[in-house]
Length: 354
Ligand code: UDP
Image: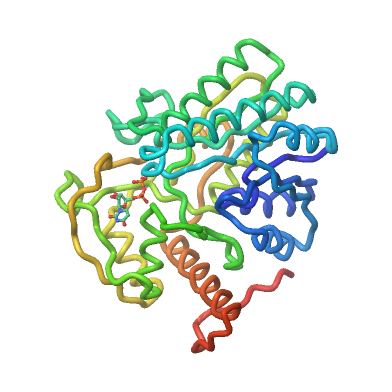
């Protein structure tokens, strides 16, 4: 039996695939490569020394997805494929509803037809909207304030309804807080194909001197230093949360939701300082207007995941800053090589699998 990872060539999916392969699982990736490249699939294989089955398929393409389901027998599906920019979702709600919701409906239909009963769904802390209480528990109210969050919540509701209707289904919903960092090899990590949306990719671009300044969105929030506070979680810890959720699905039926965060908050200035300290790099930044729709503080209560999944994050903010910088450097070196640009030797080592 194989595990299907939709969006397996993406930032989070690729880490999960590496961890699954390390456990000798048979991994099938379905990804439309809209925000990734084939090189990521090659790097998953390079890191793990194992083969994955890869299909460039858009989940909305029912015929092709059906074909994948008829080629393999899946024990579980880890469903990460989707579009994920809050800003884009406000500009293009139709695309977000279609890609995320329609894509998921077609996937669930294929699962039903092929008798696949276990799924882990990649959701987001965005479903909470403006939190009433910090840290945020899974039982907090869900009132997303943008179309992206609304699509995630709609899928969560659908999954809960399915579990109610069919007592044979095993579903875990994971609400991610702010994933950063990269695989320790520096071979896979966040490589947005278009302008980034999140703090860490902007920081690394400023560090690379691809951008002059980091814009700090507001410094008069009611927080320790006035800048926004978030719960950053290393991608390796996030991935291990999925592995623990897979174990949980072994003897669980129903639908259960878990937060995956570190349970600790860092302000924008604390992240800037940690990045500078760990990597010995100066970051130019300036404080600008608050970004519309941002909340002051967002921190996860991770007690439920600790209790039921037996999962705990291990990485420090220093690990996150170090690994985020490493992947950016590796990416730039690869690009420079491709374009035949001779670059000065940088501080990094190529990681070779044992
Ligand atoms: N942020 C910032 N400058 C940027 C991007 C983000 O100051 O260029 C801040 C943002 O206001 C928030 C934090 O960094 O307080 C994390 O933002 P991100 O977009 O990464 O995550 P989200 O706001 O979606 O949790």
